[in-house]
Length: 221
Image (cartoon, rainbow, N blue to C red; front, top):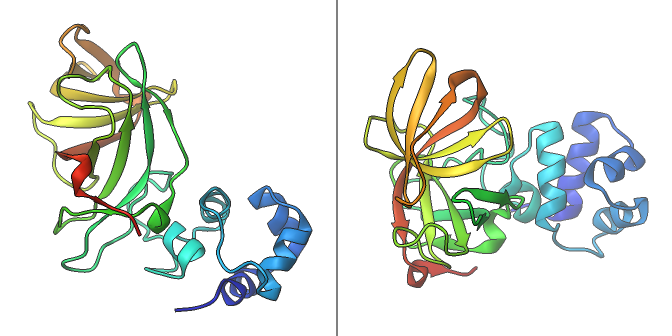
């Protein structure tokens, strides 16, 4: 495992940028970068790792903790939901937190927090990530404090629960119904909310929800 100082030097060498530019990308002061380099600061906060990772293609786990692959694999969309390929028999890393909105969709997704937020005791043979749910608008299907396990490369069929991210900012857990005339149709987990249809070009992300996991299966690092 590398130290944070070593990882920062690798980033500067590989990208050719100066400390000032790295500080700007991460949203910190140049003094903070100096502390990373000097070893005064031993670990990087997840919000800074996310910004650097998105800009230069490094994984959050490697940036923050020195664990996992250094670079994102060139598959699918590379965004805040991009998962870390887990070795066999590894657990599911929790990558962020979702605020369940009052109108039945996830009103906000916080930045991925990588390994530092712990993992779910729920082995998966596929690439996967977990999200912590906060709120009660998805009752009775998803309770406050529970988690969802998402497998972005799993095939999606009608009737599956899916994570949908639309270009207008909505992030929803829905039941996929069917596609017709360039639109995908979904039903709500909460039956009080009507069926919706979204134009395919306005769907930024569509991932398979493999499981809803009880809070008791969460293991902090």
